[in-house]
Length: 286
Ligand SMILES: Nc1nc2c(ncn2[C@@H]2O[C@H](COP(=O)(O)OP(=O)(O)OP(=O)(O)O)[C@@H](O)[C@H]2O)c(=O)[nH]1
Ligand SMILES: [Mg+2]
Image (cartoon, rainbow, N blue to C red; front, side, top):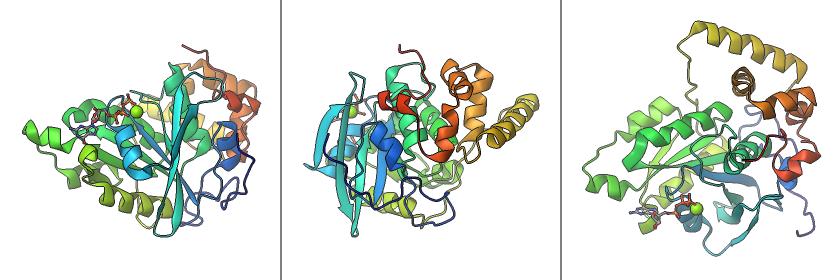
């Protein structure tokens, strides 16, 4: 690993909203996840279901400025690279393809931990426009963790070929984040994606992530109560409602993180040494 360079953003950035154009990424946690932020201004992640064109989008943005390694302690490949846009440097990390963030596999754990612990300034959620319904499942989970999201509606050429019409503006309104139609293999939509990435990273566009409401009011109440208790016990903990849901589901990794206190490190921006294995919550591997 190259020697540590001083990042231009603080280790634990200000809370989202305090300074809209400031980076929020957590370089200390990212380093533990094996990602050096160097002199980049912002950190961006590429997430999405398998085979949706994530790497194609990643390549279109980074070109040759990339390298491939493994996630620490895992045999899962990781591509990271960088690009500059309007005078700012962006570190880009290609996350493993997943259908959910429920940590039932190495890939899901890596993606989830990166979003929760690394706190990227923007997450590009790549979706397959020909399989929108299935793909939105992951997008809704990402939106529960962060509202700094741009949806890259990829494979638009394929969806057009199949006669599928998508009301992109309506979708963006419903999701509460920008949606950019793309055909990444042909380079279509890349300039628009860059623009949206910049706007979300710098906070110049207001995002209001769609948060899934659960039909059963008893569940909503339980989530509210538990989220309040989590906030009290672990001040500054982000995504408390998401964590509360995981606890109600009986997710062993999250339970362990509460028991051993590593969950609190999220709020302080210093994930424990377990994070070096990209498994800060101690969940069993697949
Ligand atoms: N027609 C069409 N094909 C695309 C587009 N984007 C990517 N592809 C193709 O889709 C296939 C998968 O692309 P990848 O970029 O490898 O997808 P990925 O999401 O990184 O896949 P995994 O890493 O395996 O999850 C490749 O054959 C790409 O050339 C697009 O916009 N249109
Ligand atoms: Mg890929």
